[in-house]
Length: 343
Image (tube, rainbow, N blue to C red; front, side, top):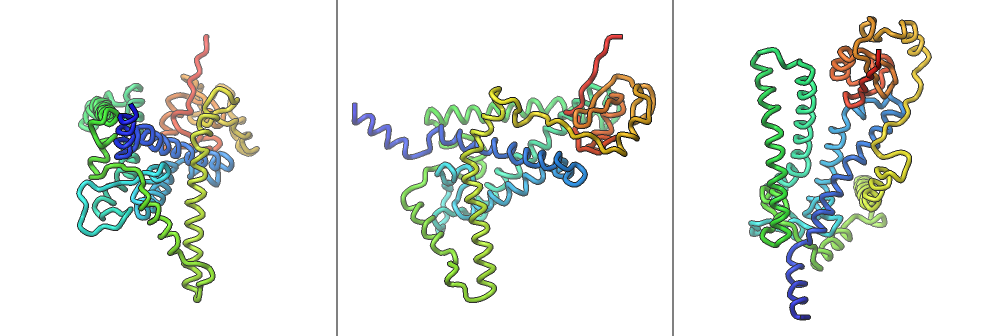
C-alpha cells in the first residue's frame, strides 16, 4: 500500500492541488470587497471631500489591481494570489530564451488582461444589465425604437452568456479535480499558461533577486538614494499587502457572519445633515417631495440620508447624479427603500 501512496504523492507534485487553486481564486474575490469597503468608509466619513472615492471605487480598484498584478507577474511570473500560495505560471510554449519566474511579453499582456481587464469589463456589463433591468421593470424601455430594441436583446442574451461562462468554468474545475485537465479555468488556457508549484530553484531565484536590491551602505549619489527609497517603499508596501492577505479571509468571515452586530457590507448610520441643509429641507411640507415639491407619490426613502422622495423623482436623479439631492451624500439605486403604507 505504501508504494501506491508514494505514487499519488509524486503525481500531486506535478500540479497544484484543487485546494490551492480555489484558495487563490477566493483571495482575489475577498481582496476586491475589502478595498471597496475602505473606499466606502473613507467616502462616508467625509462625503463632501471623499464622495468621489465611492463613485469611482471600481476604477480605483482597477488601478490598484493593475499595479500589484504588474509587480508580481514581472518579478515572480504569477499573480498576487498565485504567488501568495507559492504557485507560478508556466508557459505552454516556452521560448528559447526565458529567465526563471519570467513570462514572455505576449503571455504577460494576456495574463494582465485576464487578471485586470476581464473582471472589470464583466462587472461593468453586470452593472449595465442591472440598470437596464430596473428601467425595463419601470416601463422606460417600452417605447418602440432601435435603441430600446437593442437593450431588450441585451437583457435577453446576457443572462445566457453569463450562465454559459459559469457552466464552462465549472466543467474546467471538475476536469481539473479528476485529473483530466491542466487548467482549472478557461482563462489560463487563453493566456497560454498553466499553474505549477514553486520549486527549490525558484526560491533560490527569488532570494538572488532580493540580494540584488541596492543596499543603503552602497549609496554614492542622489540618484542611487532615490532608487533605494523607491525599492524600499515598494518592498514595504508589497510585504504589507502580503501580511494583510493573511487576515482578509478571516475578517471577511468575521464581519459577514451573524456573530457580530455589524457586517462588512452593512449600511452605517448616516451622520445628521448640516444645519443649513436641514433647514432647507424642513422648509417644505412634510408630505412634499424635496425634488418636485409636490405631494409624494410612491414614497421612497434614501438610506444614506433618511429623506423620503417620490419614487419617480429619486430613481432617475440617483442614476444620473449618484448622490442624495438634499444632503449630497453619495448614493446608488441599491440604497432606495420603497415605503408601503396602508391608507
